[in-house]
Image (cartoon, rainbow, N blue to C red):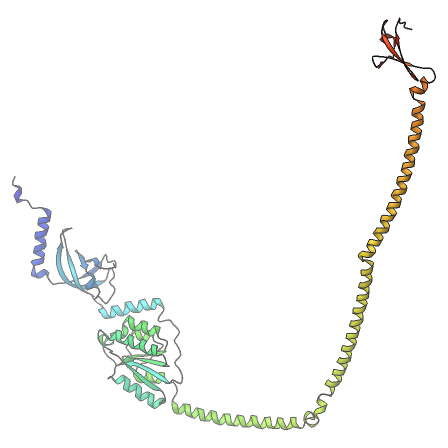
Length: 445
């Protein structure tokens, strides 16, 4: 078997890739189909394009995807332009997409609807409109320098309210850089900050011409504006994102200028004159009324006899003075009585008095102690004398004085004859001395 005829998978895949890359019909391919398996990623996008009978893998790199002006969604019909290539690692061919746009609906219209849905979900269209000032001093206008918009606004403001100052913030209103420039001028007017109203807009045109006013950056700038915004973009039938976010929408620049100047100067001056006449009449009536009241007050006794004004007060003052003196006197007496009572209680509870009573008690107790000790001593003396007499009457010496004696043997008293034996030497104790005897014999009773 000749193995040289066999190719490796890598060699075959590389060969097929070169075929794809060199085929002139595959370098620029226009493809239509249904978007499938799309999931928005941070950088490169990987998805599929399919129809009823086939599916092809697709990849769109980050740089090309930034140019897409709508949000792709699975199931959407799309038109793509790219080239066909083969991914060697998996051996699968795929289309490398350079441009993408929706099929059926216009790309701008789809982008408009998607942005409208997004901002609506955030609540930008549901905010309470800010009131337009009734008497503006300065009006900011964000529009083209050479267009008819600024001329119509100037003409209308000079006709209706010429004392208001119109300040133009010139901007580009058409093209790729228009949205950024419009947002910059809106922010610039807010940074200056001394404007009562802001008008933004341009004349009529196609959806592409009006598109800068459908950009998200312009909608965000209008929403962040501290100045009430009047939008006048296109004709009455045109509706842009800027119209939906603004506080007021005007069909034409003239209508926008009329909204910015709600009151005509002539009407304001006439109203001021009428108010001035009414104010003068009212003030005249008030002055006449006050003059009559003044005359009436001057005829009062207060001004005719001023002393009567304080007669009652003087009498009342005397009464209060007398009451005060009585109250002070009674208060002093009460305090003196209280002091005397306290002094009496202090004397009664004085430590000296307590000490004297304690000393008397000590003296009495000493006398009672001496008397008790003397009586106790006498009683004890009598008891001792009685006991001495009793002891003397019971003393063996007294019995012995009557001729009795007692016998001891070896310093022990002999109580019975059984304790003695013949030949023992005993001691005989008498009242006046003792004698020594020898036992010759014993006899028991």
